[in-house]
Figure 1: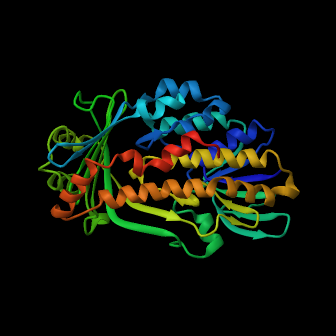
Figure 2: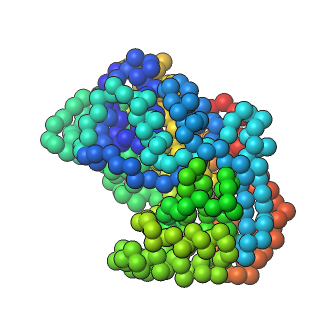
Figure 3: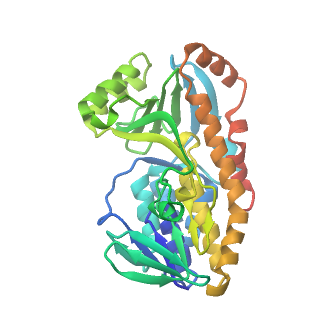
Length: 381
């Protein structure tokens, strides 16, 4: 089969690695001319991490990631709201929540897909389909014929825009921006994901073995695109000035690193399949980071797609795509719904509403909110 993968991210390289092990050599086009090591903390659930066993990267992942021990939720004054043990929740399925840098996970996935026909610095500019082939035009003027095109080019997928004609279709802007940077490890955080939920603000600390990823979520400042790094750091420090330790220490190190603004936008496509072109991963369903499950869903969905394509031939690709969607869509969208539920609880602006939320959280376990995410770890896709 002639398979084109658009985008060298989590879903794209998972597909490449698993297809290679099924005797299929896909073509991958990636818009950047050279991979960088830009990227922050990613948490990987067992249902996704186990995919790395087939691509040969699991041992490297297990050694290179940090097993997260607890998810700790506090209010903006530092009072505990919840404390969930990952070991208790995930231990029964013999897995762990591993935290690692996004760039390190991509390195593992890319090595698993070695041998694919990789074309860097290239994009797709046009798609034309017949019943049995997709004619593709690339940004360098070349063309190619493929039996299937798999769009793995992210939440703002240019391939999706070619298909629908609407760059904003399915996108939801939540009005918040998460500012993220690396800070030194703190004993007060240890190996725990620690979040402080306030009114109009969420501050999270997510550890690796040698550092912490600080994420400060707040209403998007006016004129953000024109702000300097110094202005961004000042705005973030002012917004979270009243938060307790270990937030204050992380804020003190904000100027040590580039503070990256991450718009809180998610996406839900109306259609995943357009003839012989499929939207995969964030291109189909893009997640907020609130449940920490976006990368896990992209990898797992790609693994199921590789499974179906591995049993197909060129003629039966449309059937394989439909079977893949039947196996994955409900699960992925349920996980997205969990991330949206958490976002609605996090993104509250009034102090009175925040106090009511905090009182409720003391008596409503986060496992109930994330039940579909946990369900994904124990049930077949």
